[in-house]
Image (cartoon, rainbow over all chains, first blue to last red; front, side, top):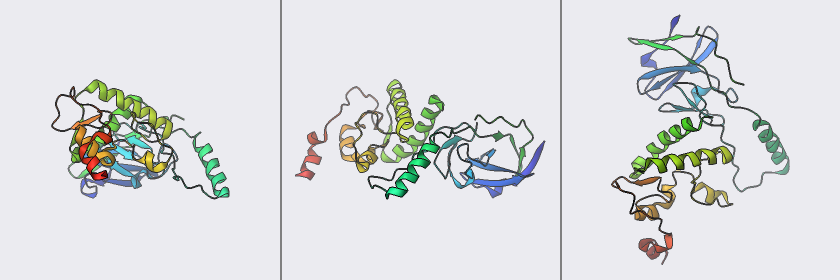
Length: 137
Length: 116
């Protein structure tokens, strides 16, 4: 069942807006006038995707810069490894960072959920009741 | 990750960068496809889509100059060649790539004068 979640006038072209509907957070993305709805949590480490950047149909996560296709929810890239340049970090910090990097290398970037969207006049409606897509873990 | 989807995404993102620089993707589609695929593999390995045609230096500053599209860091040379080192990007006015070739910086007159 489609429910109204926002108004078209609330999301500029190229912009995003996070909304909570029945306890579930989703992000509405405006790709040049076309609205797509995706789950808010990144498929890598659950960062809020509305704080990332939208470049056409490609959404980049603000945390580790994994990219997603907002039209299908497909994960387009793995996170970008942190580059500290040629500077050697202090020993303790280096060990900590190595540990984090080792753990992160085991985290798979999953596709994210997408939801059907209908625009009626100024009203954006989303169907959140569609199958609870299985997350590929 | 799907290689084809990533190639499409890289192409979409790079196009927006090279267009204002006066470049476009090479009309040789087969070559473009091959080079983008190599970049996808490099991105998987290093996390960054480096230029697939040049060796990666050890220093970070050098490596950053080889992140595709690397046109801004080699502008003089590529403008003279009318294409980038890989021939992935060509000047917008290029329709036939057969006459294009790689020219080392040392053979570019203007660059030589500047270094003079």
